[in-house]
Image (cartoon, rainbow, N blue to C red):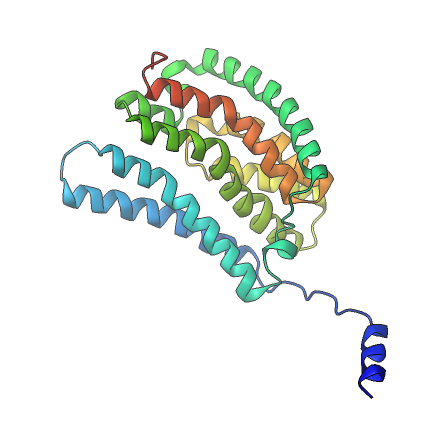
Length: 249
C-alpha cells in the first residue's frame, strides 16, 4: 500500500509556486524602513551629542544599517507573503550569473567612468561628490572603519540595493503585467531618484542602466548584483584611499 501511494505521489505534477501576494506597497514599506531608520539614527545621535559633528561610529552605522534593515524587510516580505527570496526575487548565484555580471559590469564601468568625468566637468567636483564622499572628506576614518566602509560599498551595499530595486520593486512592477522594458525603465529611474541626491540623479541613471540590463536579459538577481559590485569597486576604493589620507579629498 505504501509503495502504491509513493508511485501515485511521484506521478502527480509538482505544485506550481503560487503568485506572490505583495506589490508596490511592499516596496514603499521597505523604502520607508530605509528612510526612517536613517532619520532615527541621526536623531538619536543629535540627542546624545547635540550640536556636535557626527562621530565616526555613528556615521558608519548610519551608512550601513538602513540598507541592511531595508533589505531584511524585503526578504521578510517574500517569506511571509510569497514563495521566499529565491523564487520571488529571482535570487541566484551561478557561474552564468558571474559571467553575465562581469560582462555587464565591465561595460557599465566604462560608461559610468566616462559619465562621471563629464558630470564632474559640468557641475564641478564639489557638487559631483556623493554623500559618502562628503563624509570621508569631512573627517578621516580609522583604518578598521575605512576598510569596513570599503567592503560595504563594494560588496554588501550592492546586494542590499539589488534586493530592494531589481528584486522587490522589479517583482512588484512585473505583477502589474507591464512590459519588461517598462519595468527596466521604471526601476532604473526609481533607483536613481530614491538615492535622494538630486544633483547626482542624472549620473545615477547612467549607473543604473547596465545593472538593470543585467537583470533584464538574464532574468536573475545574481547577475545584477555582480554588475553592481563591479560598478562600485572604483568608488569604494577611492573612498578607502581618501579615508586613509592616501589620496587628497
